[in-house]
Image (cartoon, rainbow, N blue to C red; front, side, top):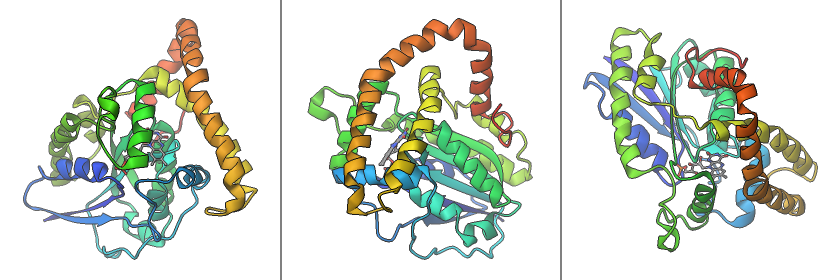
Amino acid sequence: MKKILVVTYSQSGQLNEIVDNVVKTFNSDVQIVIEHLQPDPLFPFPWTNISFWDAMPDAVSLIPHKLKPFAFNPDEDFDLIMLGFPVWFLSPAIPMTSFLKSPEAAKVMKNKPVVTVIGARNMWVNAQEDIKKMIANNGGRLVGNIALRDKANNLSSVVTIIYWMMTAKKEKLWGIFPKPGISDEDIAAAARFGKPISESLTTGEFTELQQNLQSLGSIDLIPNVVFMELRGKKFFYKWAKFIRKKGEHGNPNRVGRLKMFKWYLLIAIFVASPIAILLFYLFLPLTWWNFRNKLAYFKGVDLNDELI
Ligand SMILES: Cc1cc2nc3c(=O)[nH]c(=O)nc-3n(C[C@H](O)[C@H](O)[C@H](O)COP(=O)(O)O)c2cc1C
């Protein structure tokens, strides 16, 4: 009998649906223990305007928040740990960071193989770098990554995700925008990733797992989005530091700076990013070799590598 611990965080349930589809195809001799993380207090869903932006400094600075007590037993010996998380501001969602920084995670993850499952809009590579470091700090070994994304055009998915997050309605805005989030087809098709994971579980051999997952399309990167994301995170660190000087999460003194960040981000996305994409493609012939290596790295042939 193999035992797997599945730890997830999801507000709308989208991420949980993806993970459920992955694990439902496992052999019947696999015992699955599921832990849905619950922040204490909960983050609002739908979000209010300020609470949404107020999550940025802590998400980016990897500051843990209080979680409700875990139901799993950290002394149990699991054969695999699966982590399912959304991305918040190019960083892991705060509840997943909070889990990974807990003593229970350090205990249960030590010397264990770990598979990550991401459900994001389309920018997740920075967040995965943070997750990799936290897994390594806990003595875990990343052996596979599945990253699903919204396949809509970058700018329209910004509009639809804000609509979804602010209303909790995963539906077409005004009947003209695409449905927000990961498509129902992609969520259902996540079931195909169960087979290679369950085979690795049975044999205890995880070295080929990422390649097997990749051959099923577990990671699908958009070069110009990766380019923008890599540049964007540097500014997020600066903004997080600037906002935290006014106090910690929930402090009303931060509101002015949070509003400034909101307008900065919206202008960066809708005005600066189309220009950046144009420049990216203009200079691509000169930078392609180096950039190709970066894309290969994020697809993760050797998941425990450091960024080149
Ligand atoms: C505060 C916040 C910030 C987000 N930032 C990003 C981001 O930087 N990159 C991205 O691809 N998706 C981002 N998303 C979308 C989430 O990754 C995720 O797709 C969405 O919240 C649905 O996840 P759920 O399973 O928790 O409902 C953000 C969502 C929230 C709520």
